[in-house]
Length: 454
Image (cartoon, rainbow, N blue to C red):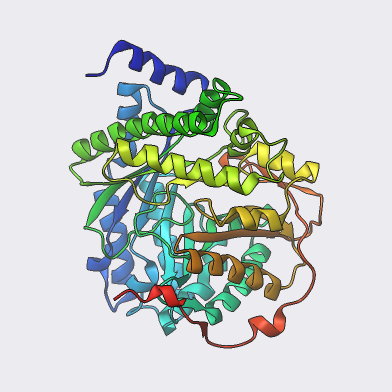
């Protein structure tokens, strides 16, 4: 039974502590749309999305009204388009037509974003995969709501270094294609190692081929709630600290479970997973960095930051899995720079560097996320940064990602304004020593020895 105290507590979390359901993401399989005729493929994709997702936004808004729980985004993820378009796309330009169809369908049903303009190339690229990857800059420049991801590595297969090299070039080209908007296209492009099939968060969401025809995945977030709870145990032992985070994560996850089950029931689509991720926003008091400071750091980036983040991530997961049998996606703590005011403050104070952020990605849920870097950086340096992050994911058997934004025309210390949930970011310095000879080696880095478990 839910008692009145719990109702009041949840209401306080929502009204005063920025608790929200960050997204209801409807995953849709497009495998049945595959056709050798490009026009027929596009028609089928549009028809499938607009039919299955017709009531997604309406349902989300009804749940918001009925339960007074804010649902920030309604999103769609689809089968990786490199798979769907293999038989009909003979060029990068052909794939761009699919991106435009996805964008048109997203606008028709009223969702914020649609993810799945993706390729999975951790062991090698087909011709179709390469066409899609090369189409990304123009696809993101010519659409509004399409998000793209490329998985270039995994613990089981190693790292496709040819794809890593190509993605460095693609990120720079995307920045150039969207330079009139502070290279915003790069904010909708992420490179993965060990990408999960059921992640509801953009830009990395896609509908994995292991999933059913349609599925409801929900992402819930509450950094402000966790920080507020920790304020009540300031100075207490690590045991008390961990218990507080775990219990708070449990409560947050239950809110997401309620929304997920309601959306599933109303749309008659199966419920997939709850992704409990402490995903910050630029709003004051909704910051993962401020949680780390509440734990005892002067700034995120100070000595002890990686340990504090590891503790936070682990307790969030422990609380989540007690609240729901279907915790999945990424689940943990995100550390995007532009979307977290505390992270921005730490960068501007000189406490947080790219090297420290990389160390933190060993224990957080994602990786180098929403980081603005100088626009004149070589593509090989971006590829080197991707390779480093992919290696962390591969060796540690975890998901890691890179979402870098080389801002054309801006240099170190200048500020980039993205707006909305994407926030703003200072342009951070990057190690200027070269790695071109390393990146130009062809082939792949083999999987680590502990990947062999059969």
